[in-house]
Image (cartoon, rainbow, N blue to C red; front, side):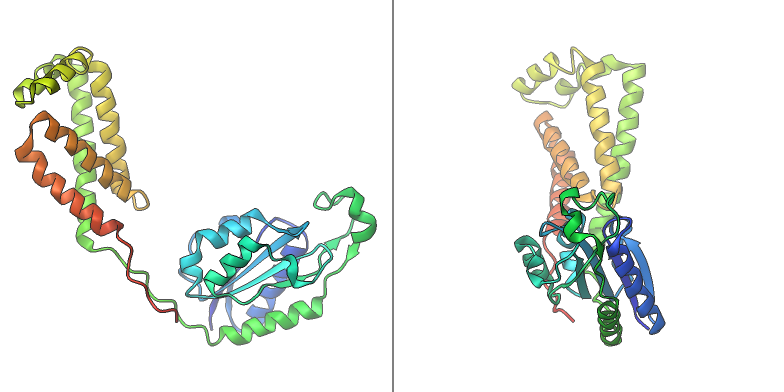
Length: 297
């Protein structure tokens, strides 16, 4: 048994009917199937087979379908991918736009199958009124749909588990987690000092042994208006800490922390800031470098 995803654009119409028919056939052949609209798909990792359907109007694929392909090229390229498009009337294969064709080729999927659609009422908002005389009616070839779904079911039996996505070294995750906690604590500390003793910031540049030009800039900004400038610093630390602790924005958190320590170097805090900056840059480089290419199964 293979787990498959059947996803589609839109909330009604022939595309939904075709997707439902494909899912029904796959389940009847013993496969586990999730049937979801494309905007509800969050993770492709559980699936070995992906079927995507899109409506086509005036030769254009749905924007949501093209976006789904574009955002998931890496994940789709190691899975069986089947694509279908729906009319409303034409069934010739030249309905594949150039940009979508490039995505299909980069994924390695077979050419999409194009089915006729259905414009059942004159009030169907998906079809311009001037076309209703030509397009009204049900053009779905249900036998062709079932035959295509059976082919997917047969080929799905040979679908291999996709390789595990390459993970960044664990130490970068630990550096990011510690960085996030430290920055959140620093933000809280700054907010407390701003509320209780904001004048403490006046002499920081002098205490740190900063160069003369840095002291002048500090005096004119944080030294004169500590409430405003140090609140900005606290908010910056809060955002950097939150990003560093998140999964998707961890690189931004590490980059923000590195930039903050460049500022500490300017203040003259070399003994603290220099080694931390080296560690942050090493973690940032290790987490950002592209993983080695893996062969497609």
